[in-house]
Length: 338
Image (tube, rainbow, N blue to C red):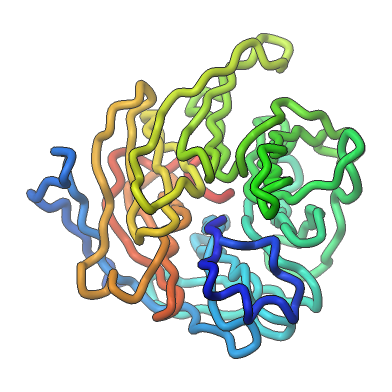
């Protein structure tokens, strides 16, 4: 989840969001190169989904995920009560409708469980994970409460093949302290285990293409780490894998394609960096320069399962948008949500 600009905090105080600081879709891969010599992929606008809300003074799109009918689910982090907090988008017809709203949730990611096929949402503000039926409705609290004696600020999530959840917990982010964690929650919601702690606002999280290990980013350190699991599902080793030279931009959500490439969302710049699993910077996804003037982040991406068409959530003062581009490999579960 992107962190909202400081100038926006005044408008958020009243609703208690201070902890949140911070088919015409033809695309082309351009011949231009970015400043570091890598390919630049030009994304094209698909549609505008939201405008800045009067109650919150902003909009922030996150967590794109395709359902089994090919519709794209997107969450609006700052949507007030009554406004769509989860949208269901037909990217071919360029239409959207409200899938869910409620009085209190501040949802920062969405993903379908391989175990029960329900939609799981992280509620950053209330430290909860909730779930919905695939077509909306039947809101249930899946997990809430403390983990190892401390509440969570769950940001992004991913699932293993058995349906257990792995969550980036940005605890300590509002205080600027490295108290964040990676938490595993059993698929029944009864047991939560801390896999890593002492992290600096962990944000993006995704398994690699083979489910052998877990990638996760830290927003305030601009780095991506990798945790390798042993045959019993325990963390065997962990290391810093990629350091992001983002300048003013910070690391947001992560997606992984069928070849294991990482798509690293950026907050502070409406662009996305693509790396190989060995840390090579492969490309930068950018939107047209004129549109970029009114946009501040490209938080996340969903790559169409079995295809290379990718849809990126982009937000800023001008509103919340979907942009499309051609990914470097086909979409898989790890590039569909979180």
